[in-house]
Length: 283
Image (cartoon, rainbow, N blue to C red; front, side, top):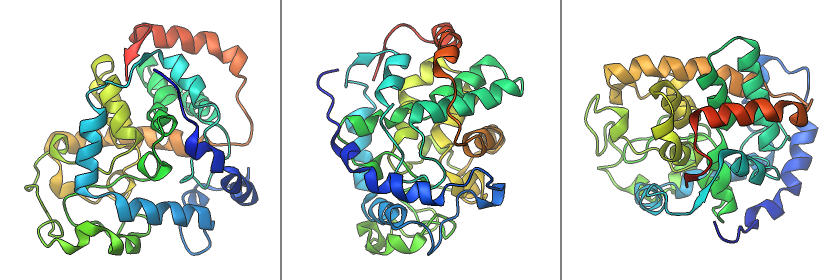
């Protein structure tokens, strides 16, 4: 894949300090995903950059750049190991590395007896964050996703930050449907660019449709949690979003301070990966 640049990863110390202050192993469910004026400044700064710069033009450009999967080839476990130093700037609920978070998510699903494809989905769902290792800024990789090309929902985290987005001055893009039609179907909607969309394209040929929806839309909280944007979804999308809602509690509420025993778990997950993926895939 060539040389990997750490770039943005060198500036995570402030985020680590803030999240440790805020972290509480006894958190109740309603205390997760609290975004208000008490949220650490690093998280608010992240969403300000994200909302100001995720335009329709930007998203279309990133899709053209990455969805052809021309970056290189590597295996799933190799990609997971490359994320071991990454802590998500947008997440106020954990300071663990991505591989630990992914193992927590997957192990919670495994404990509840979910099928193997879903456990695998839980394990790989954040692998698209390798975009950060390509040199992409975190505001273009992580955080909540939302449609571009139409009016932004007030249920998106920090909607006031969209005021400085260049698309806000285009009346065509600020209507309810924007460049889309009613119930056009999610396959025709452009969401803000990030790890969800990227990993969907990387893995879609290997996984069942339910897994594809979980990967592609798990960060679209204004849709699967707040139930907005249903006017853009087909009837099939509405049914499949139930799968995303089934997935989301494992992603969100499995976060804890205790690190999984990676050495013990590795053989199981290597075997699970090999069941669905070849040794290397295109990225």
